[in-house]
Image (tube, rainbow over all chains, first blue to last red; front, side):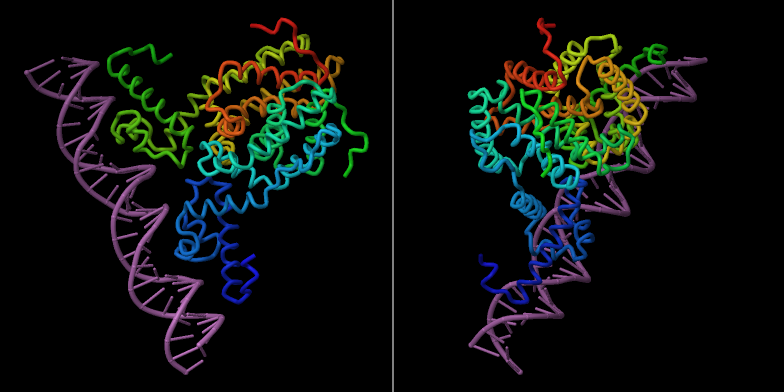
Length: 217
Length: 217
DNA sequence: TAAGTGTTTGACCTTTTGGTCAGTAAAGTT
DNA sequence: AACTTTACTGACCAAAAGGTCAAACACTTA
């Protein structure tokens, strides 16, 4: 890492300020969208002059790209190292569970992605093509192997994956609607379990599996 | 209707122009969002001077509200007249099917709603409170009656409804992602059937039901 | 400590934004 | 035809947008 070559004061403050700006930008972009967020709002939120932002990130587009890149870097698509030998019920249950936890506890990033995709994914296109698509292809192959081995029902693996994504992300992206309809102000601790249970029940049983007994950890 | 009291030339052209503007605005708002759409873009798209839009609709907010109101007026939440006596498999299968058809064939309105909700639903709040919430309550009661009558599994009715909404709307709202991941340019005719089949299989079986035999019409 | 390097920022610029308004055109009414 | 009312629009406006720039600043190094 070149970050380690010169740990002098300049670099430290630069990284600190950049982080300050990116944090503010991430929050605003995910709440108000790209067009709804102005550079001066980011400046005010980050507590730095507007020109400083333009110094680090050449343009609003540049800032937005950096925000997205940073999220992607921390973004784990999950389902790592799944193989046809794994138990589908166990794997999928924990995948669903982790997605629900993520959706309820950190909805901002999910919403930023959502508003990007709604607009036709101008900045995420490349990411989807070069990362998500191969990732999906691999998981889909495993799903298909499970199906061929009669471990689960013959359901189109792509649509199974979309079903898991949609049902879990819904609680992040459409939080406002969910809470309004359920007449709540925010999710509480029981909700995560309740949501996980409902989704896991439907999807797992829906493809001929059972929810694992020892459903903890 | 007061529309019928004076069918003179003035009223006709007014309605015509308003429709022209609302059509353009609906398209742009759903593609670019509220902040991404400017009044001059709407004017250009509709082929009328900008000031004309401001004449009919007092402000950008007013225009946006009218667009949303018009969509809501044509918006059918479906599941009309469901009763505990109905067959859940039949009812839910056709509900899912109609939602998928809607998502694939007319994604614009779904996306407009989605971007509204992403922003915290500033304009839809009232609609959700006064319309959707009671509607949901009623359907949830029917679902619960089905559960109590052992017609289907004991799954939280709210989350069942969210599951149906999320899985079907996903193909409209996140169309860009779905197509990129599946490496397609657009949905084709077989997709509607394929999507409906996959979702219906998972959800219906997932709550202990079977897809109706004569699955046509 | 002085030169060199990267950092910071107030002032400024252009373009676009949502919105106003006074004046004109086109009905409808008598 | 004369008059009233409604529909329409080009010209204009203040505010906010994204972005530039030159001068000031701060740290590192010779």
